[in-house]
Length: 260
Image (cartoon, rainbow, N blue to C red; front, side, top):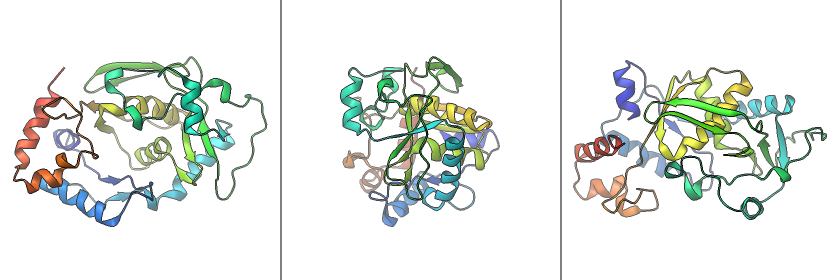
């Protein structure tokens, strides 16, 4: 969908490798990803962008948030947050990231707004979170789903911007990349709608221009189950090896994205 929209707008398609998870990213996976995309007939401009090469840019952005007092350190584990959050907070339940999405951070875990803010260590060994402005409505027009909105502090909580393994979190790295590479439209899966609300808060905190967003429905199998990397039998590499033609898969995508 991103390639189709870029072509229609006479735009440029960029390929970014989200390789900040050092334990799961290997060179052979990157090569396979590019092979799969080329098999589908996709072509991108310039050299692939690898986030692992841009850590200093993300660190500089983190320091700006720290100077502005918009983040705080967090020593709570994911289990702590899950247990305290109780029932899940759902914005557009059918479009959630499920277990991949971070849980709603309880307000009682926050330090007071006037608490002294510790410095950022040269090597970060604690999670840092963005303090969302409670009660603020975050809204945007989605190119596929139309008008969407959520309430900060209610529909989603304070979110990670830097991890205790000294790695930038997805939300921060994505916003920095989109701004610095002049991205005008972000096209991605509907499971990332909640992330868009978070990222819009970061765009505004930095005073950056916000791109347009379009979230495509997720592709499913014959039983209606979402296609995911953990389903190896449905990977592009496996489908290609089984003789499937790229146009057959693209036709299925067209049918899926046409659904209301």
